[in-house]
Length: 138
Image 1 (cartoon, rainbow, N blue to C red):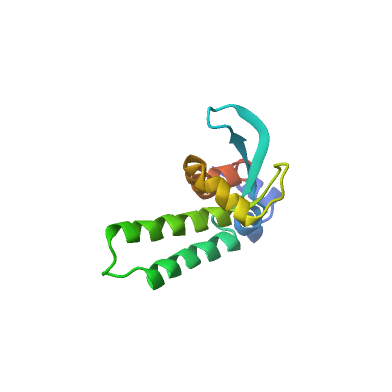
Image 2: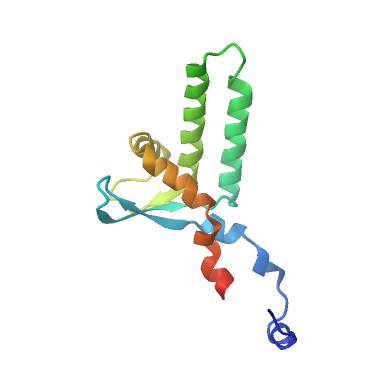
């Protein structure tokens, strides 16, 4: 519980409640090999509050709206869902420290061939404690 003295020592700052700057800066997600071996590599993942993440989510919603219809088979609907998911998760990756050039095509290739990492990126991005825990504890 905050005391009145603590409130006086530190004036109110609306920016203390902002999430976009930290989400937009991203956080490193350590990369492990499929066998669990640690590596020195990481992906820079945006938080869900980052403008690019929100735009990517809107793009995925548009993709569903524009491409899905009732005449499609379940397999066709599943293919759209998988493509949309890959598109969204790729957009959450803003950089990396791998010894190859960063580009969205390479990210998409990595995530297509490592579905577990793809899911981990989305979960990491949505976990606000990973982005704000140290800020909130201060």
